[in-house]
Length: 114
Image (cartoon, rainbow, N blue to C red; front, side, top):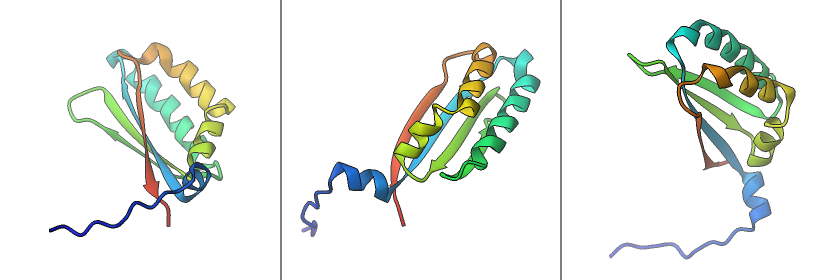
């Protein structure tokens, strides 16, 4: 039969510090706003990459659709939550709100840190 390792319990505090946070954001953009959205998105990416706790940002546009998926890798959950309160993040949210067809979909996942 399968050999399962015993459960290893970890405290919440150490989990936050030992894991990388992946944030996936899906944004469906109104066709007429694509050029404006790309400009705002590029500014946001530049600001995010310059943040010391951000590890990587990647954006993909779905073929044949006005839908973008952005992946942000953060040092930990606390770093990302703090960045959400920054001017760069707030400005991006304010700018894109009227450019969206639907509400932005955000999901997160903790990945084991190195």
